[in-house]
Length: 390
Image (cartoon, rainbow, N blue to C red; front, side):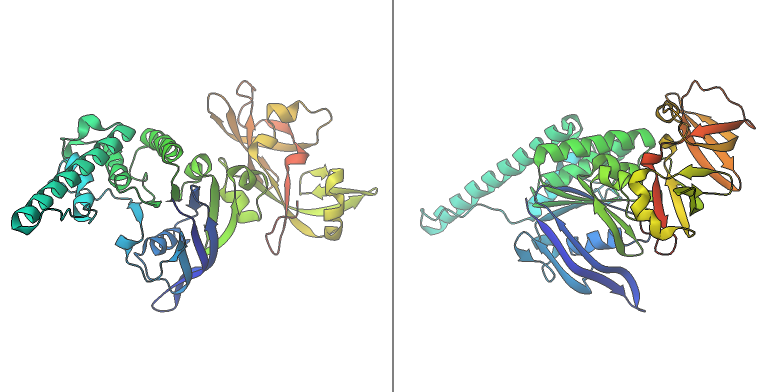
């Protein structure tokens, strides 16, 4: 295991195309760190710089206590799982997993007690048998961890997508690296298999307790797997936090809208002072500001802001259960029953939003509803900087 540090790391491609800019991050020993963001945000490029597959234009990458900027990938003590499984089609599962060990020089020290040619030959033979036994032990141990013992004699074409992914992970486990790198490893799997595999990778991390860096564009994967999450946009880190902190306390509008399914609702509003009280006023509603927000919103009186509200904080059973809760009047446009809950796609004035309501709430398209709001869970953002105010 090892700590990974990236200090002022940048990547510039020919033509002055900047993919990553001033990236600073410390990944703790044994931590599961997830990098998430839209396509083109620089997350895979950053991972490849850690792996040594991309040249670092600026800054330093440190693994353990060693700066690895100029260290070859094979000497960085890392193992990487790619988006495509990259298995040898002519080799069995066992041979695929054992291949990297056969190519690596971890032969035990030669025993030179026996002098002469015959003694050297005997030592070589003993060491070769020890290496074979060690490879076999590692492969079978990894197969046992991943539950693929019965697949060891099959070739990749006889495996499902999920089984191939397990083999690709197993090929990394046998190396016993200091750091695991995952580059969108589940993107080729169907939805059900993705859920199963992300659970297995999380279980694997708990068992091995090895540092893991995982890249994905799927925020659900990020939220369910990571100890901490790095949210990226346009080559820049937007926020680094635990899943709970990202969800409850996003630093800006991008993070607030990217994290969460369904995404956060945003309303163009302004702060008004009415009878000595502050209100968030939109075209078709006005909501009293909680007392705890007053001081932070005073400088924004008569200014535009963006009001954010997650779907579960408008029209939900917990919101409707609050006495004298403020409400937003809106018209039902689409109803999506999800079984345990229902999503209502609503329209208030010119703004559309989503409400997560009780599945047994009776309503039809076109109905006018007054949906209760949990103001304490709302968010307010600065229009100009997009930074969080509340």
